[in-house]
Length: 330
Image 1 (tube, rainbow, N blue to C red):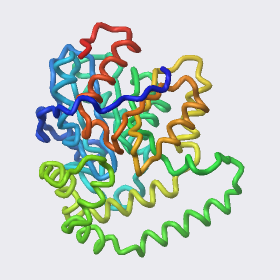
Image 2: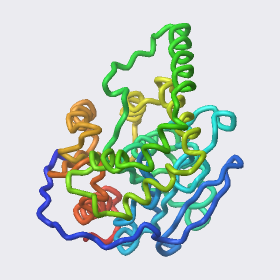
Image 3: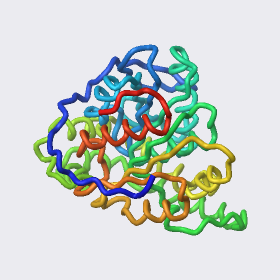
Protein backbone atom coordinates (compact mmCIF):
# COMPACT_ATOMS: atom_id res chain seq x y z
CA UNK A 1 0.00 0.00 0.00
CA UNK A 2 1.26 3.45 -0.91
CA UNK A 3 1.70 6.10 1.75
CA UNK A 4 -1.61 7.92 2.03
CA UNK A 5 -2.73 10.90 4.07
CA UNK A 6 -6.12 10.79 5.77
CA UNK A 7 -7.65 14.11 6.74
CA UNK A 8 -9.89 14.37 9.79
CA UNK A 9 -12.96 15.47 7.83
CA UNK A 10 -15.34 13.27 9.79
CA UNK A 11 -15.53 14.64 13.32
CA UNK A 12 -18.25 12.22 14.42
CA UNK A 13 -17.43 10.30 17.57
CA UNK A 14 -18.39 6.67 18.00
CA UNK A 15 -20.19 6.11 21.26
CA UNK A 16 -18.44 3.18 22.88
CA UNK A 17 -17.67 2.09 26.41
CA UNK A 18 -14.62 0.99 28.35
CA UNK A 19 -16.47 -2.04 29.72
CA UNK A 20 -17.12 -3.52 26.28
CA UNK A 21 -17.63 -7.24 25.80
CA UNK A 22 -17.70 -10.06 28.33
CA UNK A 23 -14.75 -10.00 30.76
CA UNK A 24 -12.97 -13.12 31.96
CA UNK A 25 -9.82 -14.18 33.81
CA UNK A 26 -7.32 -16.62 32.34
CA UNK A 27 -4.32 -18.01 34.20
CA UNK A 28 -1.04 -18.47 32.36
CA UNK A 29 2.07 -19.63 34.21
CA UNK A 30 0.11 -19.01 37.40
CA UNK A 31 -0.42 -15.35 36.48
CA UNK A 32 -3.91 -13.88 36.23
CA UNK A 33 -4.66 -12.28 32.87
CA UNK A 34 -7.82 -10.29 32.18
CA UNK A 35 -9.40 -10.61 28.75
CA UNK A 36 -12.68 -9.75 27.07
CA UNK A 37 -14.58 -10.82 23.99
CA UNK A 38 -17.37 -9.49 21.77
CA UNK A 39 -18.94 -11.13 18.72
CA UNK A 40 -20.18 -14.49 17.48
CA UNK A 41 -18.22 -17.74 17.91
CA UNK A 42 -18.02 -18.53 14.20
CA UNK A 43 -16.49 -15.20 13.14
CA UNK A 44 -12.87 -14.53 12.22
CA UNK A 45 -10.82 -13.80 15.38
CA UNK A 46 -9.23 -10.39 15.95
CA UNK A 47 -7.19 -9.48 19.03
CA UNK A 48 -6.62 -5.90 20.21
CA UNK A 49 -3.30 -5.21 22.00
CA UNK A 50 -3.08 -2.00 24.02
CA UNK A 51 -0.17 0.39 24.49
CA UNK A 52 2.01 1.25 27.48
CA UNK A 53 0.01 2.32 30.52
CA UNK A 54 -3.29 1.37 28.90
CA UNK A 55 -5.38 -1.81 28.84
CA UNK A 56 -8.09 -3.52 26.81
CA UNK A 57 -10.61 -0.82 27.82
CA UNK A 58 -8.71 1.60 25.55
CA UNK A 59 -10.37 -0.12 22.55
CA UNK A 60 -13.72 1.22 23.79
CA UNK A 61 -14.51 2.91 20.44
CA UNK A 62 -13.38 0.06 18.19
CA UNK A 63 -14.65 -3.26 19.56
CA UNK A 64 -18.31 -2.90 18.59
CA UNK A 65 -17.70 -1.69 15.00
CA UNK A 66 -15.32 -4.59 14.38
CA UNK A 67 -17.78 -7.09 15.87
CA UNK A 68 -20.55 -5.66 13.68
CA UNK A 69 -18.25 -6.00 10.65
CA UNK A 70 -18.04 -9.75 11.24
CA UNK A 71 -15.13 -10.32 13.61
CA UNK A 72 -15.05 -12.07 16.97
CA UNK A 73 -13.19 -9.38 18.86
CA UNK A 74 -10.86 -10.12 21.76
CA UNK A 75 -8.96 -7.77 24.02
CA UNK A 76 -6.33 -8.73 26.56
CA UNK A 77 -4.58 -6.87 29.36
CA UNK A 78 -0.90 -7.61 28.92
CA UNK A 79 0.78 -8.79 32.11
CA UNK A 80 1.71 -5.77 34.21
CA UNK A 81 -1.18 -3.69 32.88
CA UNK A 82 -4.88 -3.17 33.46
CA UNK A 83 -6.55 -5.83 35.59
CA UNK A 84 -3.92 -8.47 34.84
CA UNK A 85 -1.40 -9.28 37.56
CA UNK A 86 1.46 -6.83 38.12
CA UNK A 87 4.25 -9.23 39.11
CA UNK A 88 7.52 -8.26 40.77
CA UNK A 89 10.96 -9.12 39.41
CA UNK A 90 11.14 -11.97 41.92
CA UNK A 91 8.26 -13.65 40.12
CA UNK A 92 9.00 -12.50 36.57
CA UNK A 93 12.63 -11.41 36.21
CA UNK A 94 11.81 -9.02 33.40
CA UNK A 95 8.89 -8.03 31.21
CA UNK A 96 9.67 -7.38 27.57
CA UNK A 97 8.01 -7.69 24.17
CA UNK A 98 9.11 -11.31 23.77
CA UNK A 99 7.48 -12.24 27.08
CA UNK A 100 4.25 -10.50 26.07
CA UNK A 101 4.39 -12.23 22.67
CA UNK A 102 4.53 -15.57 24.49
CA UNK A 103 1.46 -14.48 26.49
CA UNK A 104 -0.38 -13.55 23.29
CA UNK A 105 0.53 -16.81 21.54
CA UNK A 106 -0.61 -18.86 24.55
CA UNK A 107 -3.86 -16.86 24.69
CA UNK A 108 -4.58 -17.61 21.03
CA UNK A 109 -3.81 -21.30 21.47
CA UNK A 110 -5.72 -21.76 24.74
CA UNK A 111 -8.63 -19.31 24.43
CA UNK A 112 -9.16 -18.20 20.83
CA UNK A 113 -8.67 -21.65 19.30
CA UNK A 114 -11.46 -23.04 21.47
CA UNK A 115 -13.88 -21.48 18.97
CA UNK A 116 -11.89 -21.57 15.74
CA UNK A 117 -8.59 -22.78 14.32
CA UNK A 118 -8.37 -19.76 12.00
CA UNK A 119 -5.36 -17.50 12.18
CA UNK A 120 -5.87 -14.39 14.30
CA UNK A 121 -5.62 -10.75 13.23
CA UNK A 122 -3.57 -8.62 15.65
CA UNK A 123 -4.31 -4.89 15.98
CA UNK A 124 -1.94 -3.04 18.29
CA UNK A 125 -1.33 0.42 19.60
CA UNK A 126 2.26 1.40 20.46
CA UNK A 127 3.67 -1.26 22.81
CA UNK A 128 0.86 -3.53 21.63
CA UNK A 129 2.14 -3.07 18.06
CA UNK A 130 5.63 -4.14 19.08
CA UNK A 131 4.14 -7.16 20.83
CA UNK A 132 2.12 -7.98 17.71
CA UNK A 133 5.18 -7.82 15.43
CA UNK A 134 7.10 -10.00 17.90
CA UNK A 135 4.29 -12.55 17.98
CA UNK A 136 4.18 -12.67 14.19
CA UNK A 137 7.94 -13.15 14.04
CA UNK A 138 8.03 -16.09 16.46
CA UNK A 139 4.58 -17.60 15.92
CA UNK A 140 3.70 -16.94 12.25
CA UNK A 141 1.43 -19.98 12.11
CA UNK A 142 -1.01 -18.20 14.46
CA UNK A 143 -1.23 -14.77 12.83
CA UNK A 144 -3.23 -13.74 9.75
CA UNK A 145 -2.25 -10.05 9.66
CA UNK A 146 -0.88 -7.26 11.85
CA UNK A 147 -1.99 -3.64 12.15
CA UNK A 148 0.50 -1.52 14.10
CA UNK A 149 -0.67 1.95 15.11
CA UNK A 150 2.11 3.03 15.41
CA UNK A 151 5.21 0.83 15.86
CA UNK A 152 7.68 2.10 18.51
CA UNK A 153 11.10 0.91 19.62
CA UNK A 154 14.07 2.89 20.98
CA UNK A 155 16.23 0.64 18.82
CA UNK A 156 15.01 2.49 15.71
CA UNK A 157 17.37 5.26 16.75
CA UNK A 158 20.34 2.90 16.96
CA UNK A 159 22.07 0.80 14.29
CA UNK A 160 21.53 -2.96 14.53
CA UNK A 161 24.81 -4.47 15.65
CA UNK A 162 25.06 -8.11 16.63
CA UNK A 163 28.86 -8.02 17.11
CA UNK A 164 28.92 -6.31 20.49
CA UNK A 165 31.27 -8.14 22.89
CA UNK A 166 29.42 -10.24 25.47
CA UNK A 167 31.29 -8.65 28.40
CA UNK A 168 30.27 -5.16 27.29
CA UNK A 169 26.64 -6.15 26.95
CA UNK A 170 26.70 -7.83 30.37
CA UNK A 171 28.24 -4.73 31.98
CA UNK A 172 25.65 -2.48 30.36
CA UNK A 173 22.81 -4.68 31.55
CA UNK A 174 24.21 -4.79 35.08
CA UNK A 175 24.42 -1.01 35.27
CA UNK A 176 20.88 -0.67 33.97
CA UNK A 177 19.57 -3.13 36.55
CA UNK A 178 21.31 -1.20 39.33
CA UNK A 179 19.90 2.08 38.06
CA UNK A 180 16.30 0.83 37.92
CA UNK A 181 16.67 -0.90 41.29
CA UNK A 182 17.42 2.44 42.95
CA UNK A 183 14.91 4.49 40.96
CA UNK A 184 12.18 5.47 43.50
CA UNK A 185 9.24 4.22 41.45
CA UNK A 186 7.21 3.47 44.59
CA UNK A 187 7.13 7.24 45.14
CA UNK A 188 6.98 8.44 41.53
CA UNK A 189 4.20 6.17 40.21
CA UNK A 190 1.55 7.00 42.88
CA UNK A 191 2.46 10.69 42.68
CA UNK A 192 1.99 10.82 38.91
CA UNK A 193 -1.17 8.67 39.00
CA UNK A 194 -2.91 10.95 41.50
CA UNK A 195 -1.93 14.37 40.16
CA UNK A 196 -2.42 16.47 37.04
CA UNK A 197 0.85 15.09 35.71
CA UNK A 198 -0.99 12.02 34.44
CA UNK A 199 -3.44 14.10 32.43
CA UNK A 200 -0.63 16.28 31.09
CA UNK A 201 1.31 13.24 29.96
CA UNK A 202 -1.78 11.62 28.48
CA UNK A 203 -2.68 14.79 26.61
CA UNK A 204 0.69 14.59 24.87
CA UNK A 205 -0.55 11.42 23.17
CA UNK A 206 -3.52 13.30 21.68
CA UNK A 207 -3.94 16.35 19.48
CA UNK A 208 -7.53 17.11 20.50
CA UNK A 209 -8.27 18.08 24.14
CA UNK A 210 -9.05 15.21 26.51
CA UNK A 211 -9.69 17.15 29.73
CA UNK A 212 -13.41 16.30 29.69
CA UNK A 213 -12.87 12.60 28.87
CA UNK A 214 -13.24 11.25 32.41
CA UNK A 215 -13.54 7.69 31.18
CA UNK A 216 -10.14 7.87 29.50
CA UNK A 217 -8.48 9.32 32.58
CA UNK A 218 -10.09 6.66 34.77
CA UNK A 219 -9.10 3.67 32.65
CA UNK A 220 -5.48 4.87 32.61
CA UNK A 221 -5.18 6.01 36.22
CA UNK A 222 -6.90 3.11 37.99
CA UNK A 223 -4.25 0.43 37.21
CA UNK A 224 -1.46 2.91 37.99
CA UNK A 225 -2.91 3.40 41.47
CA UNK A 226 -2.68 -0.27 42.39
CA UNK A 227 -0.03 -0.95 45.09
CA UNK A 228 1.76 -3.39 42.74
CA UNK A 229 2.10 -0.93 39.84
CA UNK A 230 5.58 0.32 40.72
CA UNK A 231 7.12 -3.12 41.00
CA UNK A 232 5.65 -4.15 37.64
CA UNK A 233 6.97 -0.97 36.04
CA UNK A 234 10.43 -1.78 37.40
CA UNK A 235 10.27 -5.24 35.81
CA UNK A 236 9.26 -3.60 32.52
CA UNK A 237 12.05 -1.04 32.67
CA UNK A 238 14.65 -3.73 33.29
CA UNK A 239 13.15 -6.05 30.70
CA UNK A 240 12.90 -3.54 27.87
CA UNK A 241 16.28 -1.95 28.62
CA UNK A 242 18.20 -5.24 28.72
CA UNK A 243 16.54 -7.06 25.82
CA UNK A 244 18.56 -9.07 23.38
CA UNK A 245 19.06 -7.17 20.15
CA UNK A 246 17.43 -10.02 18.27
CA UNK A 247 14.00 -9.10 19.71
CA UNK A 248 14.14 -5.39 18.94
CA UNK A 249 11.82 -4.16 16.20
CA UNK A 250 14.57 -3.54 13.58
CA UNK A 251 15.81 -7.12 13.96
CA UNK A 252 12.27 -8.55 13.92
CA UNK A 253 11.35 -6.69 10.73
CA UNK A 254 14.58 -7.82 9.09
CA UNK A 255 13.75 -11.38 10.09
CA UNK A 256 10.28 -11.07 8.58
CA UNK A 257 11.57 -9.42 5.39
CA UNK A 258 13.60 -12.46 4.35
CA UNK A 259 10.76 -14.94 4.71
CA UNK A 260 9.42 -16.39 1.51
CA UNK A 261 5.85 -15.84 2.67
CA UNK A 262 4.64 -13.54 5.41
CA UNK A 263 1.39 -12.15 6.75
CA UNK A 264 0.59 -8.57 5.67
CA UNK A 265 1.48 -5.68 7.99
CA UNK A 266 -0.09 -2.22 8.00
CA UNK A 267 1.54 0.69 9.83
CA UNK A 268 -0.76 3.51 10.93
CA UNK A 269 0.69 6.82 12.04
CA UNK A 270 -0.64 10.11 13.33
CA UNK A 271 1.22 12.97 11.66
CA UNK A 272 1.29 14.83 14.99
CA UNK A 273 2.59 11.88 17.03
CA UNK A 274 4.90 13.35 19.69
CA UNK A 275 6.01 10.00 21.13
CA UNK A 276 7.00 8.18 17.93
CA UNK A 277 7.60 10.72 15.14
CA UNK A 278 6.21 10.04 11.69
CA UNK A 279 9.75 9.99 10.28
CA UNK A 280 10.17 6.59 11.97
CA UNK A 281 7.25 5.15 10.01
CA UNK A 282 8.43 6.74 6.77
CA UNK A 283 11.91 5.32 7.32
CA UNK A 284 10.45 1.84 7.92
CA UNK A 285 8.43 2.09 4.71
CA UNK A 286 11.58 3.05 2.80
CA UNK A 287 13.59 0.17 4.30
CA UNK A 288 10.79 -2.36 3.88
CA UNK A 289 8.58 -1.43 0.90
CA UNK A 290 6.37 -4.46 1.58
CA UNK A 291 4.97 -2.71 4.65
CA UNK A 292 1.77 -0.72 4.26
CA UNK A 293 1.75 2.82 5.66
CA UNK A 294 -1.24 5.09 6.26
CA UNK A 295 -0.97 8.56 7.79
CA UNK A 296 -3.74 10.30 9.73
CA UNK A 297 -3.71 14.10 9.75
CA UNK A 298 -4.25 16.11 12.95
CA UNK A 299 -3.84 12.96 15.04
CA UNK A 300 -1.41 11.88 17.73
CA UNK A 301 -0.17 8.62 19.23
CA UNK A 302 -3.57 6.95 19.70
CA UNK A 303 -5.47 7.18 16.39
CA UNK A 304 -7.79 4.32 17.37
CA UNK A 305 -9.15 6.40 20.24
CA UNK A 306 -8.76 9.92 18.85
CA UNK A 307 -10.36 9.40 15.42
CA UNK A 308 -12.08 6.01 15.82
CA UNK A 309 -14.44 6.33 12.85
CA UNK A 310 -11.57 6.83 10.40
CA UNK A 311 -9.38 4.26 12.13
CA UNK A 312 -12.10 1.59 12.04
CA UNK A 313 -12.91 2.26 8.39
CA UNK A 314 -9.28 2.16 7.20
CA UNK A 315 -8.41 -1.00 9.13
CA UNK A 316 -11.57 -2.92 8.18
CA UNK A 317 -11.22 -2.06 4.51
CA UNK A 318 -7.50 -2.96 4.52
CA UNK A 319 -8.23 -6.29 6.20
CA UNK A 320 -11.02 -7.07 3.73
CA UNK A 321 -8.61 -6.47 0.86
CA UNK A 322 -5.51 -8.13 2.27
CA UNK A 323 -7.22 -11.16 3.78
CA UNK A 324 -9.22 -11.65 0.57
CA UNK A 325 -12.34 -12.47 2.56
CA UNK A 326 -15.92 -11.25 2.61
CA UNK A 327 -15.75 -9.16 5.74
CA UNK A 328 -18.07 -6.18 5.67
CA UNK A 329 -16.55 -2.82 4.77
CA UNK A 330 -17.77 0.35 6.45
